[in-house]
Length: 331
Length: 204
Ligand code: HEM
Image 1 (cartoon, each protein chain N blue to C red):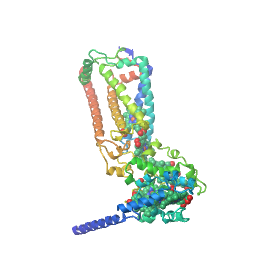
Image 2 (cartoon, rainbow over the protein chains, first blue to last red):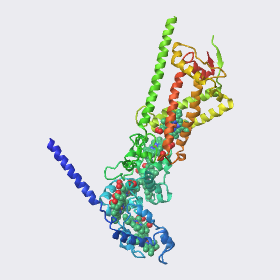
Image 3 (cartoon, rainbow over the protein chains, first blue to last red):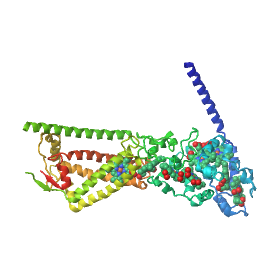
């Protein structure tokens, strides 16, 4: 029996080594930012060529006279935003191909922009399966892609963003940018018949008090996605409709709050002072009724409550007993 | 032969019972919010939040009425313990609750039209109504409009100190309420003081 356990254990260790080795290898995603300074400088110069036109400065002082400035205005990028994104340090042309190097850009250049899956094959495959289960994919298969939500020039994963307020702001902007915009929503809903009128978000969630506060404190996906069955992914991409979405307040508003394993997953890992609170990591950015409690204070209040009740009951019992004795004596 | 004096005007009795009902509702729903998810006896969170918000706003109005009516009627003077000998009178009252009451002694300071409260009562009522309840009301209002809470305080979310004060002050009010209701049974008969709070007449 023991040897079986032992060999199982050895197998598990070996498997663990193999998996971590594999993931270390997988970290070398195509186009990954190099660490060699010479290569970094080469990429910087290559990207600077694009930024020569595709930035506010480029728009103000175009390097050429024959540019359609009205079009360019829609295509302005912020280098600082790109440098903070997941794809910081990558060369523009890794995704965009060679077609954009010269101007005017090559006619078919747009078709050769890489899909997410070309570099994130395993992840994208798993995510696609989840995404395909949601209305967005079911009803708008062609139009609704990864890029509808993810701007590859700006998006930062929660793990990298850290601050829950920033995570919430970024992730909710994806959904709200469409669900609160008649124009953008109609662009998509036009393809289903009968065309769906955009319902107002606050009306849809009228059962939730202070929706605005919640939009700033939690993500739509906290309630609209199940926990990911794939461990390596922070969240599932399956969007749940009204039948399955989370409506139970206590999921978040209790000591066993789901927030700890979702939005505050990363905050919990590098938590700061805890002051004896349950879910202390949340306290840095929000006070969540029911979730962020101090067990010491709660116990103190409980003891005081118990003592008060005990003293009062004892006092009352003694009063009754002595009054009865007095009455018996006088009669 | 019982002796009766008319002590409590209608507005005071109406306020008292409105306040009492609201406080009890707030205590039950507040506890349900704070201890959410930890027992079947609690009011469901979303219902508790709705009731607590409504009752909270009602209590703000009731408290405002209490303060204004007390000023206008001069009743606030009742809450001021009158020197000299305040501590001595408090002590005698405490000794009565701890000893004399068991022997069936009479109250050391029965209420009169001039001095409705004994010194101990005046001090405790004053502290609760003018120090603790305002804290509950003000922190409750900030809780209701969290955009007015400071964004950060002592390195944590600004709502934490607000919530903490609300919880502690609320707990003090509840402890007071327990003792208050119990002391309500210490009249001539167990029910006399409750009757007085309804009819306004004190019996001796
Ligand atoms: C006897 C009086 C009261 C008691 C015992 C009480 C108790 C409580 C408790 C225990 C909580 C949970 C807080 C936490 O988990 O930290 C709470 C929340 C709250 N209280 Fe009170 N409270 C009282 C009066 C008020 C008043 C007068 C107001 C409003 C003006 C108010 C507004 C709130 C609000 C807005 C919350 C947040 C949850 C919600 O919106 O329902 N409370 N209260």
